[in-house]
Length: 151
Image (cartoon, rainbow, N blue to C red; front, side):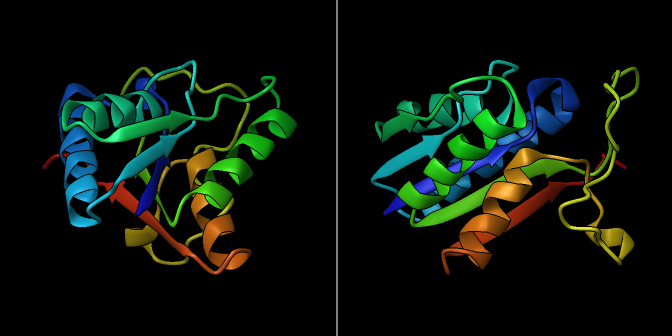
């Protein structure tokens, strides 16, 4: 079983949501009994980096797909590679941005999903696009896990 785990960059997490994300990553690797884990080698850290760290921590084979260049076309091709390689793609993101996060000219919430229910709302993530691509274009399991803000 090849498991793709993708999601939001490191700056979109607080220490608490990072801890939750790492727990989710470890649980997904175990639940799917992954023989290999693939991710996107995001230069901004976060889910891609934590996924590889957690997988290596349990002795799981890993493969990273860095984008050829830092534009949507580079990220899109990388995301398609992940979706094509993986049997299952999991996107891990957060419900909202942490205080002080400076977004750069993009919509805060996901325009890939355009959620209609408040409980489905999450911040924008290219990982979301990747999970949807795996599900809708390749017929694979593509799941989005949203980490809710602490109470």
